[in-house]
Image 1 (cartoon, rainbow over the protein chains, first blue to last red):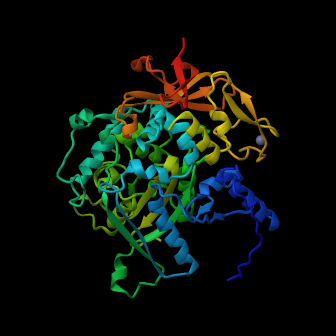
Image 2 (image 1 turned 120 degrees about the vertical axis):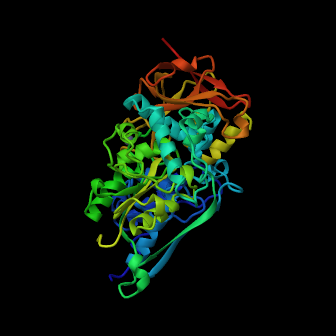
Length: 384
Length: 141
Ligand SMILES: [Zn+2]
């Protein structure tokens, strides 16, 4: 391995009242360090923010970094779940450890509900001064805005949103672990659920959940270990963010998200395409986000996700059985790490009543604060 | 929070934003324009997204445009908004500069059933009950 050196250093002025924003300060120190190294922002492949007051997203906008620059400390939004698997992969590949656990735990219903958690996300200056005064503060309201535009441009219907909610709930009836197991939903129930923020009704919104999920990854050779028989290959992982990751309103293309960049990278690394995926676990914080990600992950052309789901594609027996555990909408919401658990069960052939026959390749997506996105592909026995 | 506290917090946390939150009725609505390359930028940031320059000049804009998207909130996300529901938030694409979009509230007098993407709207500046400046949009013919 080549040696590691420090190539450049930089700092802003140290004062009692800078009169400048945190992103502006971070930008200055980083540019000075790069200049000291004889480099430019285009050289940067990764950002390692010291957590607490600064996010990588604060640095990305100021320096014009690539959408997929590696973020070693991602924000605590929904993309963090799958990103933990990506971070474990990096550590294992670097040889810094040979077994790693990605683990998430939260009392997301009883103690730390979503209304309190949104203030931990990046871009708080925009939230507080440009959005909160209008009462635009909750994820349901942010993403309702994207859904509404998709409906206007592509004729996407509430029937398609309902189909996502009903499919996830039907799948949960086959999963005793799901919070909504034993609570089937009809279209009448869906239509009667209260409107939260147009077009989202209560049943378009994910659950809030107390619980924990853990995933153990290893680089050990397990061929002689009987437990290794059930190992599932992480074929590829990638994570990216939309342009202007911390602001939705002025993003040039509202439908171009992190997944738009991450999905092609993952297919290329794995040497397969969307048609090779047998089952998908899509980050379903809200029903429209499933449609949105189906398009950007390449499972159907942009604008056609409504027709795709209305064909029954997401149901068991459909073209792409999706969120066979019930998803965040009906199984439970632990930042999507539960999607990895279900992907593993499917390609192991251990999904019981909800098993997708001959499932060999499973895709998992992550989605976080305003469209950060990631994707992982998992392969069962014989898939290399 | 009253208007004065709101402004001093903005000065502290978001100095790039603060000059644009003034909201005094006499001041025109303004957005930053990059001195080096002329690009208008919103929301305000430390550097230009196109050329990375850090010098901006505040440029008045006419609050007229079209609804880019909207949502009507029926369940208050937190108790502080309970007295407002139902309320409609719009993202408005300005006619000029056409790449700039501004968030705001649709005036409650506008009929919800007719609401759709593409409607023309005109903005006026108002203040919340606490005195915080707001942009309120009205549908125009
Ligand atoms: Zn510029």
